[in-house]
Image (cartoon, rainbow, N blue to C red; front, side):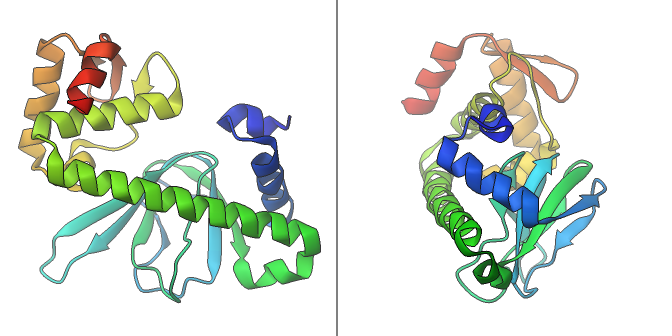
Length: 217
């Protein structure tokens, strides 16, 4: 199994596509807060996060901001059904990103086909995450939303102590809450002994089964 499959826990065929992406893509570096692509910009490039974290955001006509999703090492982003990006993408931390022009894939034969299949798989996963996000926004209480977010991130990174790459305002915009509500729910979860924070961004889930029951109920 390739290094990427080991690092990201991906199936061998998917890791092979990512290895191909790495072989033909262009590596770019973005500083924290730097824009990777803009809302309504032509969507002719595909991006893969090598290191760091990325958020996608959309500004509404009245100035409000909606966060679409967060992307981490191994994730593909910039995949659109139309010709333009509906969201912009910004680096949450210093990032290394692989960039590939999608129209160029036809010149790479089977290698290009591997990446196209990986793009379809990423599209299916994005749809699944969007459906889960809609359920979270529409059916869960504020505390359940924050608990779901912490549990999902901890499961993604598979580490005993998880570092939040985003701030409280990003969490609030993603969960459809105010920053004050997010802070209050984090305090409540910690007071109930479900999570333990060391500083503002590092936490450990101390009662996983209880936190999972809260999310599922």
